[in-house]
Length: 475
Length: 137
Image (cartoon, rainbow over all chains, first blue to last red; front, side, top):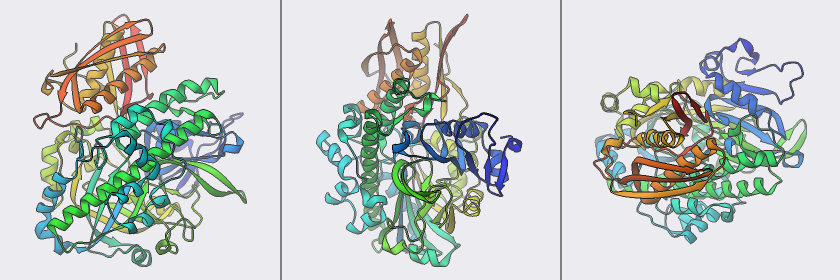
């Protein structure tokens, strides 16, 4: 991206000045100079379009891992006020509603696991349904799908998946209010009947990781992390139900925009006023999908524990945190000295509540919310903590962000060679898709270290620990 | 029918292209490109067929509807498709997809979550029709 058109507000915050007579909200992109230069021009185009949506409060924001998405850029954040004409956008949430990461900490250190790493990798691969065309063993009726949409992770817990303690370490304690299964199509519900407890495909994964470096010992202690410790991260979302809700509403809201008096700067920003029948319908359906994703990750955490119990009976896996990064949530934020209820869209962005936030579990109240930046299978991931004074509606990065298209990655890498090369670096990959492995090559992603560093420098969240992958089950 | 499915670049996802002498042919080719992301078409036997019909006056929205209906049908049947037929009368579309249920011998690609409105276009020139959009993977 040509960064000469940007004005630096700080070392890690950039804006695009308005042209004379241009009516839109401000935009702010959080990144260091190099990350900004590496972003696609489409990121600027898309975030400018977001800034033109009705009822936006404050600037439209892009996180350091931002890249070209549809509607919003991936890494896009924007807040809207329902009482002042604000909208809710299906293009601001995405198809994989409530895609996110469940991070489990263990009582194991790498030497405990190393002798059985290959056995564990194989067992996880066999037990966690992953990849295109894979279904889980859980087969459900429509009534049960409705229950999941209302109850979230509680539904899974009530059926023996996971532990009571998990719930306090999931956003909204595992169940968001406002889910309305009546706003979810029959097709969406049908698609989910065989998909609970499945990982999905693309950039989804289950990784066994080792805590390689602790940056902030006090926060690490609060999070229960120490160097050498084994943790597990599960990255997935609401599966077919969320995909179908995204499909249904993207088209219906795009068609309704004209009737609702909204001039869309891009059809992908399909949206409706929050205080409209269409807006309420999408909100109810989206919340239903969030609960579905929370239940799905609860089941996957349980399946993971079962595998560990078979291979390493001494293992104890407890939930560090479960955070979603494709959502729109009603939250209270202070804007120019006034506390307002806003609908905060985070598309490929993680919520990052500051220390002291009332919604944080007691254990993390002083440290701040755990924020997880999931990196590529060959580099690593970061655990960060929310910071006071976060300038982006308590939001932070969610991943490394792609630096190269999937198409380009396929031309450059071969899946088998990549898996062998990673095995030579003591990273065991298990996947049904060699194509998927090539598309997800570590070299196709931005430098996660720089993304995490920029996230910290921008005051979005501070680094707590770096996690190095040892086993990766790829979707 | 073109031999190789056609694609265009997108930063995070994949752009699919369908070309053909008629709009219906172009849509069928776009479907082939979409499903080829999930499995090589030549590995997909024709053991089942599904029928799809819908009404959509806007040809661009029709492309998105066509692809998304196919993706949903594939998931409902635990299947992958490799060949597609489509006919159109005004705004009414009637299509068929042929394929098989997933089995271990099929090389797995990457799941397509849905067809989006990004870079969506359906155009006609002297060479025929071209349909394109980005699919989310």
